[in-house]
Amino acid sequence: MMVAHMGVISTATSCFLSVSVTRHRRTFSPRSRPLALAAMTNDPIREWILSEGKAREITKIRPVGGGCINLASHYETDAGSFFVKTNRSIGPSMFEGEALGLSAMYETSSIRVPRPFKVGTLPTGGSFIIMEFIEFGASRSNQSALGRKLAEMHKAGKSEKGFGFDVDNTIGSTLQINTWASDWIEFYGERRLGYQLKLARDQYGDSTIYEKGQRLVKNMGPLFENVVVEPCLLHGDLWSGNVSSDKNGEPVILDPACYYGHNEAEFGMSWCAGFGGSFYNAYFEVMPKQPGFESRRDLYMLYHYLNHYNLFGSGYRSSAMSIIDDYLRMLKA
Image (cartoon, rainbow, N blue to C red; front, side, top):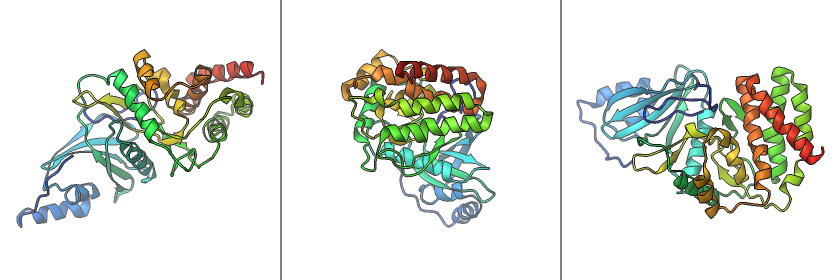
């Protein structure tokens, strides 16, 4: 899921289907304070902006995009701008996962991400997230800069806990299980491929893809021979809709599904990202390519094809099934 920060439409994790700061402290004058407090008591978003956000007044609220999952708004104030997403039917856990992921990426001081400020519940039900508003530039991100900055994030973002994340989060609107594991093959087999295969079986009664997929999970070990897999901080849903650039031309990534995993898993949405040669060349200058990289690329795409199958239906089944069948032949499983 991606919601852009400057009039770019809100999109889903699918390539094809649309779904969904330095500030100066101000003091309230006696005249303006009652109005601010009246607004604060009824609206937690306004309350935060007019207190911890250091704003004296909100001058304009503009809708951004047209997403089906979340509503997005640009709040303009005398203390700067804020980007706000709300969801009237889902509790704060989804936005809490997003905020933790954004914070983890922000703390690597590598690639630019919107800094999250506040997650909370709405009084009438639902939840919200307030974050930094980033004004996007007129052009897409420079591929070389994107590759280098992404590799720097992977290099800086390490975990001593193993593979996983402190909370479960979502990939699109699908739950993403992030329970920690010490073994990458186990983590990817059970919490990524295995979970999606079970969803397909339970949702569509698709026992064929489930049974073949489980055979692959049990036999994919040889694909990782002579490979050292270290847990790196991943964006987790890196496709073209979640990549942009700021007005200075620096790459920006947003709407993550973060976890600590094999850095190569970051390229699982490459079929929908438009990464070119300059991107990979710059990336591998910082994070060298490991033996067998090409033989694992489709394995990491499989997770996202399965997720698209579960989210959007049978149009993605053939791609997932083809990858599974190819690996079963390759591995003689």
